[in-house]
Amino acid sequence: MDIRRYDGKTVLVTGAGYGIGRAIALRFTREGARVGVLDVDLETAGETVGLIASAGGVAHAVRADVSKSEEVKKAVDEVASTLGPIDVLVNNAGIRYVRKVLEMTDEEWNKTIAINLTGMFYLTKAVAPQMLARGGGKIVNVGSMSGLIGQLGRAAYGASKGGVLQLTRSLAVELGPTINVNAIAPGYIAGTAMMREVDKDTKNVEWMVASTLARRAGTPEDVAGAAAFLASDDASFITGATLLVDGGFSAARFRA
Image (cartoon, rainbow, N blue to C red; front, side, top):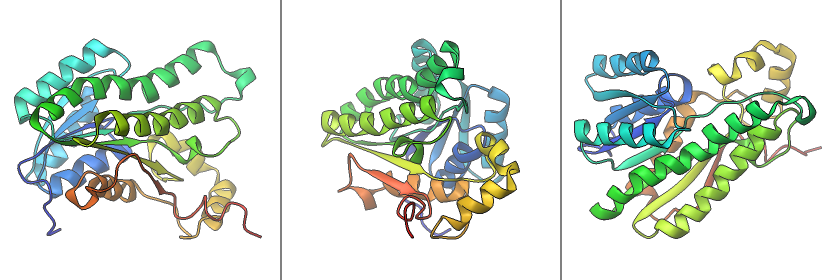
């Protein structure tokens, strides 16, 4: 790849130990960034750093549970002191329980909201002050198509991701014009840990692919490309927006 939009910049990606987060970290690396790889599992974060190093990039693994504000602050400080002030924050860490509301436990609900939504609040509070002090920055929040449509068994997940999209709009208002804040809403992205059980359901996968205008499942790299665009100067006039990366699934949802 010849595009190097992030030479000399530091990017922090949460949930970067696997799946979409790993693909995002690798994409920013290929475009010249130094990457902070944050994950609750330091071993998988280290594996991502190893892949980056093998590709000639610079990265640093750091462990934090994004639902704990003190761990987030410590991790952000470590990345900034090791790699330099953070220019781009990609809030990607998330979990999902597939449960109907009446079957979901209080713990599952609270954990989903804490990681998927409150974690983004903590990361933004930790990173945004240094961006404001330096006169600029970009924040990209990874939401979901589930934050825009109702789905069976996705009440907690959908509520958390709907909150992400609204948080994105509010942050864009509060932090602009210094910081651009946007969201990505992926559709069916195959091959991730979160979608492992879904990928096993051949009939459901066939239905989702047939219902997608692109006629294929998405890949983590599809989401990574969108993140790299929204964090770049090419998207300098875009803020408070949600970019659907769903292959046209939502546009075709009710076609005849």
